[in-house]
Image (cartoon, rainbow, N blue to C red; front, side):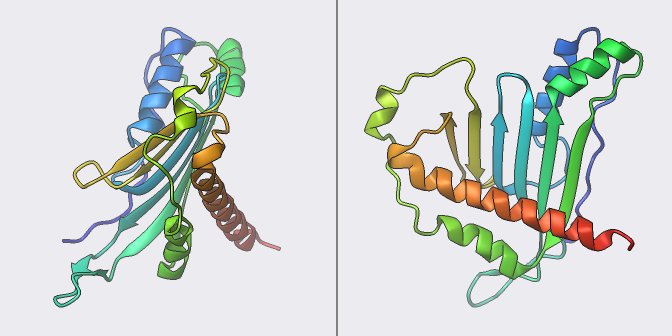
Length: 200
């Protein structure tokens, strides 16, 4: 079966309040409304002020399975970065009003090589964390912290999701460090690609 990577534009509808904008944006980002692909890995952070960052690794293109090893071959990979500044959009809302308001979501996709794909996932090969570390039971959750979600696997396959607030440290520090390194790599790749596309 043949697949292609398709990116959908931000939601456009009539909003009665900025809360409607925020809810529509969260649904668009959190529920993968921006692409036709299921993420192999998705990392998302949300601040109390409505700043969203989302990083995804997706597989697309012509896919087949090796008859002996059962490994997926002839597939393509891409990284997707979605950013939304809720504070800036709220300022735009106050200036422009509700008429045909479109959330200003920055969405970028970049095809990566199989080597880069393996480089990202190798960051998690040696991560050893407990399912429910002791410090989680006594961790104080604040309303003004940064919420993190990390998910491996798609909606129809075996999957696992990790969620935490602020810097958990302790037993989950390895996981936090690995995802921040993966995020930095994706940012570097996208920036380098953008710079290479600019005309001198």
